[in-house]
Amino acid sequence: ANLLHMVELPNDDEIDGPILEFYRNTASPADNGDMGTLLFTGTDDAGNKQEYGRITMEFDDVSNTGEEGELIFRLTEAGASEQEYMRLRGSSRQIEFNTNTDDIDFCYNTDATSDFFYMNAGTQRIGIGDAGTAPSYLMHLEGVDGGNGELFVERTSGAGIHLQAQASYGIIGTTTNHSLGLKSNGSVRMYVEASGSIRIMPEDASSGTLKLSGAATGSA
Image (cartoon, rainbow, N blue to C red; front, side):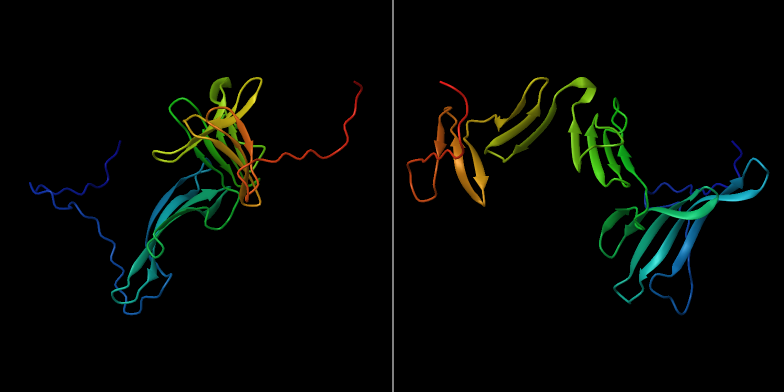
């Protein structure tokens, strides 16, 4: 590699250095104005100079004692520069992806599975596990390498609810010594007790009621 420039500090202390400082010295700074940019350029296969990416720091708020910055990451797409991918906001303490709501997907890979977490911007759906880059539902969880799809919700020292998609069954229940309740309109209507018994409960009674509606068909 060809070294064009190196910033070196031969001190033995461990305070910051070396420091590369960009100082925008202006008497009239303005909110949302550009403070400085790292610009990455190169040639294309026709020998033309082309921008490929930039990192820009902006003044978010220039108020004295209330100063805040934003750091913006942009890449070139199809020959057009400044497609924003991510920004770090000091004002709201956010790391924001796809600020301009473009068709930019987000993916995370594990050490064994590509696209393990995939947010498809075009379809506005999220895939987890082997759901892939085109999840079929708003939140689509599929087991990895043909295994069960599983979701576990737990309270510390409390119940643990397990939702599982198996090869032949769909399973939901508790994996702890707690009952499972089913709600409608904000109230629990039925319990599957930890012992295995089933209790159907109106709100105002300790004894359950069971109502069956509809016509039965078939022959005795």
